[in-house]
Image 1: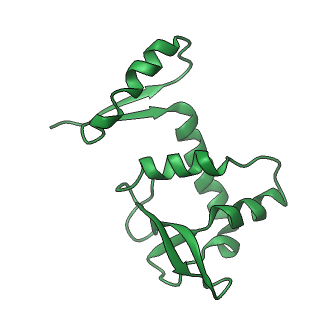
Image 2: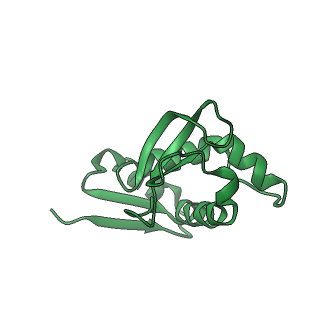
Length: 130
């Protein structure tokens, strides 16, 4: 079965967006991307690259472990905006299987304690969650 990707950008008719959102349960065959989500995911990875040494909690070099609260704290020291926790959670949940492995408890190499992180395959090893 072929994969269909629908990108919604500048759509003013909310009924069309609502109708497309109802197709989300067919996620295995249809991917619905909001332009804003794609933009935020790209921005997330740009910020990750900028702050990598301060925010990757993973001990395993093949994985990336990001705690969104810690990431937000680091980014907000230099920038004025950061996506909400709920927005990132939805974004990452929608990308599980595309490089995003889920939300798990890990032992942080930065804090030397157990914390909750979003886990991703390392892009240099396997590919990104985008």
